[in-house]
Structure formats: structure tokens, C-alpha cells
Image (cartoon, rainbow, N blue to C red; front, side, top):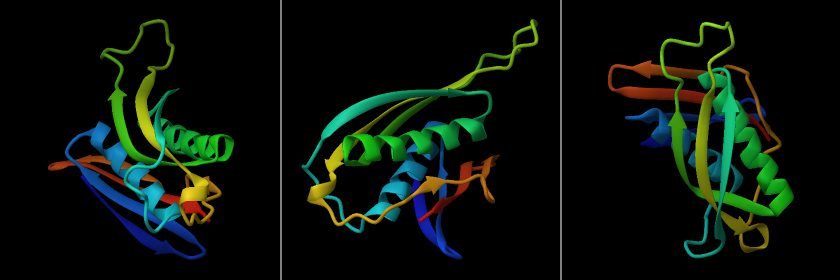
Length: 146
């Protein structure tokens, strides 16, 4: 899995590829970490877990990244070293008309903000967001407001 930071007007974007959807979520989250800090100490911080659900893959990625920003603000840590497991709904979708539910179960190492020189990433945006399956795996492009 790989990610690259891309300049985007006054914002920053993360472009990522990975062989699986779970690895893609982790790669985009790693890109968010890189957007917030040049260098992460390898041993600082403790792991924490989280779970998010949504009605589409795109909404799930948005909600997951938004939750990481929230955790940063509440815990005063920079989430790093992301591990993700994306759970997709079983086909077919329920016959009662309800929307399928996607979920991500994830963990990150919470590096104390006082241990890094952090830049503020204010929010994840839907602006130009892309999340798609490709022949060789998965691709995402996400813009963050800085």
C-alpha cells in the first residue's frame, strides 16, 4: 500500500493505492498522519481502537477519517500506524429496503501531540473525493482542509 501527499490549493490531498479496501483505508489514514506531521517517533504513544459504520464505502472513508481528526482533538494525540478491517455488507441487500451497512474496525497508535511538531489538519472534505476499485486493487483521493 502506498500514499502520496498532493498539493491542493490551500489544502492538502492524499492519493493512495492498495491491494485491498482495508489496506487502502490504512494508507489514506497514514497519509492523514503525514499531512499532520513530518516525522513520527517510533515508540511514543499507546494504541486505541475505534469502529465506524456508514451506508456507502465513500461515506465510511469520510467518517473514519473524520473520527481520526476528532480523536486527535479529544485525546490530544496524532493517530499513527493505522490498522483497518473494512467489513462490507453481504449481498444481496436486505429486502426490507434498508440501506446496507459498511463498517471499519480500526486501531491507531496515539502519539502525544507534545512529542511531535504537528500541523493542524482541520477537516476531511468530500471535495474531489474518489474511491474506486481498479484492476490491480483500490484507489483513493481525499482532500483535507488545513
